Amino acid sequence: MKILITGGSGVIGWNLLEFLKSKDNDVSFTFNKNKINHKGNFLDITNEEETINLITKLNPDIVIHSAALANVDLCERDKNLANQINVNGTHNVIKGCQKIDSKIIYISTSFVFSKSDKAYTETDIPSNPKTYYGLTKLEGEKLILESELKSLILRIDQPYFWKKSWQHTNSVLRVIETLSKKQNLKEITDWFNAPTYIPDFVSATYELIKNNHTGIFHLTDPNFLSRFEWALKTADVFDLDSKLLIPINSDQLNLDVKRESINLNSKKIQEKTGVKMRGINEGLLDMQKIGFSDSG
View 1 (cartoon, helix red, strand yellow):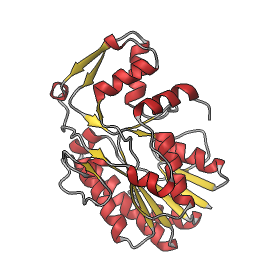
View 2 (cartoon, one colour; view 1 turned 120 degrees about the vertical axis):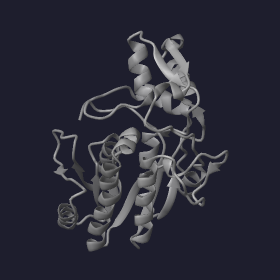
View 3 (tube, rainbow, N blue to C red; view 1 turned 90 degrees about the horizontal axis):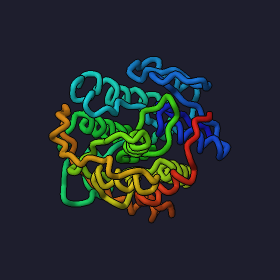
View 4 (cartoon, rainbow, N blue to C red; view 1 turned 90 degrees about the vertical axis):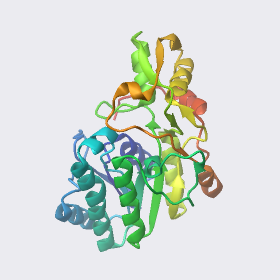
């Protein structure tokens, strides 16, 4: 199967790339900011002509669209940039897919919802996101659904795993790196997440592709916990000093936009594919077992 991954040098795209290649698929990828020593295709998805031309030239069966501006505060500060990448860029990728009638898989986010006491299921209709990032990703979802292409929308939240040197860090690695240096780390008590363990995300995505599924799926942890609780569990699994963790309220950070605690129900993915999204303890223990490698 021929697969193209936009944003393939990022942590989500890269892990998909490596796994799908291991299953004997013909996988190519695009990069933009993260130029790496691997054969990929430079692409600015905001350039309509270049995006359409590359997709039609490669002619993939599936395009996995993971390229995005995911910096929540930057999206808030520069709404035009967020709109150009997350909305117009997605529209350009869709146009390329329509030219060759390829399936599109769109990596989305819990931020398309607003805060609620409930755990959202895939049948819940997102509305009124409180961040501009969430708004642009929701607009992307709408474009996918309106495109009439065969599609999957995969919503994630706070993905974590080991990373390559050129990739952005994540909450787990920040705890490991900081506490390993015997330094204090402030962690937030009033932000809650159902984090996405990337190897489970990759396995679930592969099963969805293999069995030709379409629709919306939540690929998140069955647990819902605060960043501080998450940090405590990380310290425990990696045998680090949890006393170095300092609990704080998110208001102390003076960020451009307040994050909302949004819980996604992920039961559907196990029902449809048999893949169980692991809880935070299982994910952390698996990370520890695998160990860090920056090879590749």
